[in-house]
Length: 473
Image (cartoon, rainbow, N blue to C red; front, side):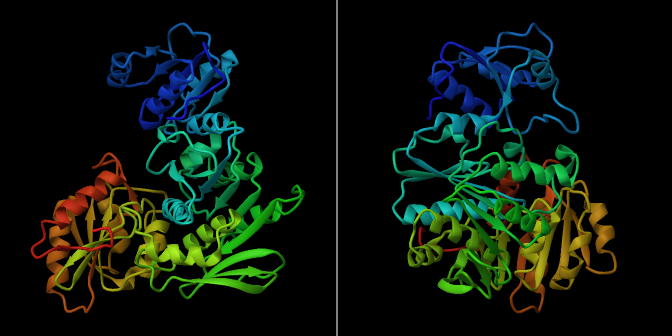
């Protein structure tokens, strides 16, 4: 645990008692603060009291003297409407922050390199890949934030170590302190628009990592207009020693300075339009698919910014084990392969999976995002049949009508049975049963991880299934 200094003997409010809320409460207590915990769920408050924490109804009762209010990522702080406790904090003049801002306060002055990664799609893979590359290069490395462990569940970073953080827009939007050494912006497609008041607010939340954080090295994906604008903005008025590295998942980038691109399964580092190093992804099993080109380019640029030799990065790509629930190959039954892409919670993420395979037996559905799956029409020819589940199955069926044969499976377990049966009976040479829902999971599962675990459990029941053998196995 990383204790939070600077609040000894003072009360600090903690709103929202999910994973990050309890972690930050423990860190505050370890640093000598008096955490005051608040949540809308009585069961969470009972758990807090059982663990010896002070609790309060900050929305309705008398307002205690708080030094700061720390808000969990899932709590709305402006749109569609600010939580009542946050509104009271504004009225009381109490600074509102989150665990990410508090984390950067806690590590100030320590010899720790922080890489912070944001964007819409690919964050988790890029974060895990960057952590893997740095660990292989000899850095004591921890990975957390919006992936795996909450920041205050991490161990005390030792001098000379690295921390790689995945940061969502919810986390970058509210953090009062952002001080990464290297910050990465991957891409931007519409998501979480209700929480940010539209696409402009969503982009602004991501851009805060660079505009407030002022990292020494900014790695910017420039395959969308927002990234190109951000890269251009960061190249003006930067301090000496600060650098902006443009990356692309599809094309060579021109112009002066350093850039990294991925084309035809090769990541290339360019300096002033001259290729200076390369990494081949053909033999990297966990980095297949065009979408992983940008992820690999970003990890390459971040690791180079911390001084890792290019040849060492290339070797690390080959041993990367991949990420659970993101294009995760589970194994196969006869000719039929099963791929778990439960983390594809929007259409753009699902497009990356659909673009990777042919002969797809697609399991999709849940709570759809704005736009549904209309943007996926260019990939419909790859889909042999779709198996629809969850709240918006009927909506998806209408989008697919006349284009893709559909089965209203209803549940994930039934969809696996239906898809496995049809894929095995088909004449396709290399059929893939793909869970890539293009939806949030909350209608049927607690989160995308639970959905992916349920998919894995159902696949393991398929007759003749043989799990994938990895080096770690």
